[in-house]
Amino acid sequence: MLWTSECLICSRYFGHFTNDKSQQKKGEEEGGQKTVAPDMLIKHPLQNTWTLWFFKIESNRSWEDCQVEIASFNTVEDFWALYNHIEPASRLKVGCDYSMFKQGIKPMWEDEHNCRGGRWLINLNKQQRSTELDNFWMEVLLLMIGESFEEHSDEVCGAVVNVRGKGDKIGVWTADAKKNDSILKIGEKCKSQLKVYNHISLHYQAHSAAQQKTGSSIRCLFTL
Figure 1: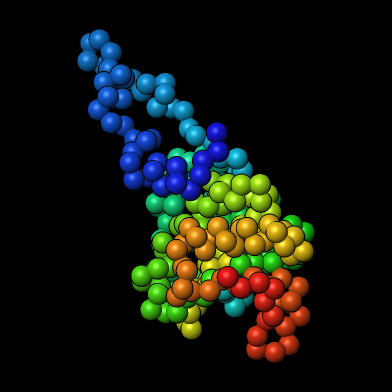
Figure 2: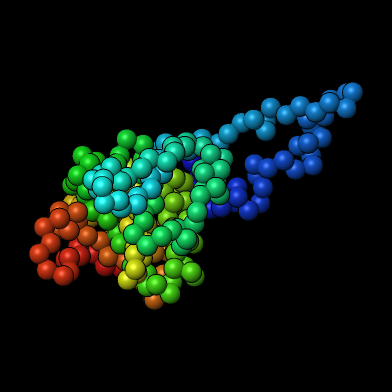
């Protein structure tokens, strides 16, 4: 069974995986002792294993060395255990990033899984950090780990949130910048799920264009 972003939200807010009274009663044995019911021990697997990374620039370390692998998970429960015990993106210090990528993919353009791809970019101003950043970031994570892009989910490598002084960014990275149909479907799903119909635009940039940037702006392949 694939866990969509809607199912994952339900698992958090409606207690699908918490100990309610009926489950506790099932675990009771004669003599007043309690055991954990077998169905409470079952975790709900995701289709992929995902890894959370944290970035903080340090002058005495290379950019790559500043990327720190935090933890990997492959179940719904382990995702929420991790997500609920880290600082929200809005409380990161300026200059820091969170990245979440499929296991085996590093959050950098040079990685062999990323180098031919690009990213859907969502730009937020400083005022939106306290109102929209955390919700957008959570929704993007749920879309990814819930395989909500359907047949195009294999094209998704991961996502990055950058907290910066001039404004924050969320990027959804894809594997191949030439797969126009997949790129557009992924972008449309993000725009719909985040409900950013008018006040925020999504722009798709190829990583190769960003690396070769000579001016102040990077040419966008698509805008939604």
